[in-house]
Image (cartoon, rainbow, N blue to C red; front, side, top):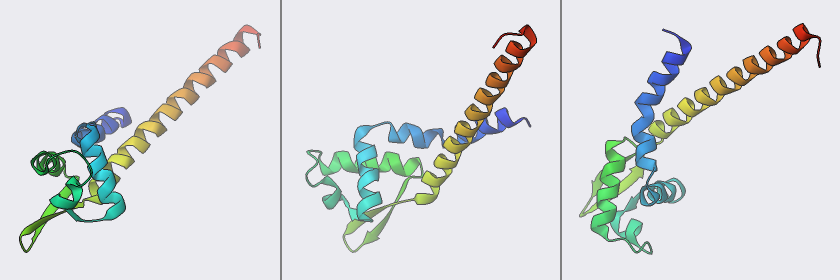
Length: 121
């Protein structure tokens, strides 16, 4: 399998993560869980102007993307970040960045080689 195809498969694997993070509310929820750690719906809803039901819906979307997981503690549902999924997405972005850097390097070498062949600088 070619490297380009491999990178495309990696990106397809993490596309749900990027789709889930494409919503401001969901991105803010992930940010809060990153900074504050596991939180209940009540705490995640406070000060957001978003209802607990709406926060729950957004968390479920994040859960389907593998970004968060929930657990019961007594009567509360506690949500926490799933860092492995974010790390996988970061690695995919790193690979894309590396691929672009290599492509730009090849283009630069081609342009410089073409200049040398024409005798121009």
